[in-house]
Image (cartoon, rainbow over all chains, first blue to last red; front, top):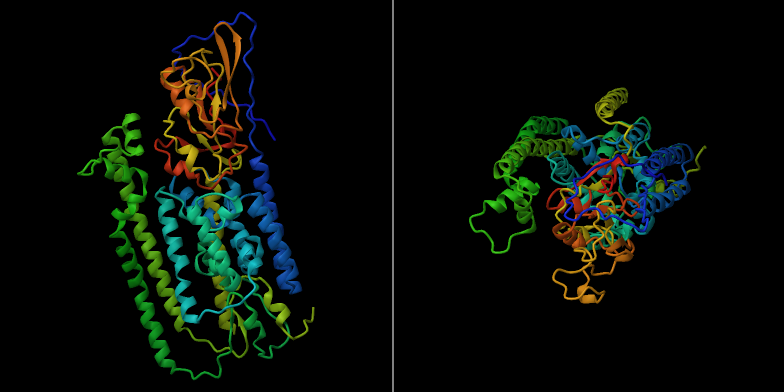
Length: 410
Length: 181
């Protein structure tokens, strides 16, 4: 534990009573306040992050073994989860990054930047190896998952849209300095800390019970960082291959996959006429800018309502409400006690509302753009003769390897 | 297959390029010099609203009462130790300000008493701080005990702090104290 010598911060003492004049030779006690070795542990986090992602990448791409992934998952849940109590995580670091881009007063620690970037860089080369077992939330769900109930493609397609909306709102609220919603609604952090908001803990436990039966519900249908990793993984240099032999279409890997990332061959299906498909893609491509602009305008029209999440806007609304309540809220009382002026608050509110107008348009635009892209992707048909891994959905957990009846050449 | 491979390479170049770009922009803003950021209470802004006790994600808040001996008047009738309007200066429960008995005092010499906080008992309610700042020298104040603090990415208390007194500061300034006068 390092002990920090504090820069002398001299606060004006009230000094209603003079400093006592001791005659008995009393000495003032010296109290040293130690600071945990946070910087050291943050670098340990970074080191472990790299080592564990490399291990998963090696195990998945070279060895095709799941054992290593399970081992990494256990270490991750224990270390990143219970020991480091889940903060700062890559998922939440999206908000720190956004805040650093918009707020010049906020200084992003280099370790947080690395926690944000490293999994994305790894995803560019090896796919979602971070999700596999390095992320404590993914690891926790993976470790409890025993059954593989499948959702229909349509349902999981629709639910897969939620993370994008979540991401858009997380960016909106972080950029406007309102709050970190990813941290606030993090379902598993309460379990790792063994405390916190009861509602969120119950939500986390329910999600964990659900993940016993359905593979990784949080990762697939909520995680805003997972979708970023998914996009990068789509162009990854290496993608997970179930086998290096020629696939015999036995379907076993498809059934084993907890996140439904192994697509069936579709050559037997009747293909629609090429021109019909091309026409639909062209239509969606035309629709894409419309959806983007439309989404932006739609969310921007709600920006004043959304801005109530900012403390100053909320306080201003309280102070200017027509009907003043008999009992003042603590915030209003504090406003008077601190002697803040109404003009200063109003200026702050105008500033906040302005940034809400900008960021709600951007967030809405993102939602519209993603919807358009998802529609386009839905219409891009490609022929598959064998079972193929969809890189953006595959979390590199390695469950499929043991199910493949073909002997690996490695 | 050629075309698909080409598209994928283009895609990874774009993705890699934007990652490098983002890293560059953020890297120039970030600095390793000051280390990690920690949450800290600015005692000057704190209004002792009592939310520190209840809003912390820990069962017992990481916010504790700190005492600046250098500022303290060592009074017998201490506004942080006794409740307002006590009849007799004794340690009967109805006279004590601290609901958990975390403030201890020791007789030094006539008429001075030394006050110390038993951190294990303190819940960070700030009642004594309020008493001390309205009646005494303001030597008691609330601060985050960094060894207990979990360093949440967003402090749950900071989000609801009525005066915005909880802020992120670099590790080196994690304790803003009152006793370096």
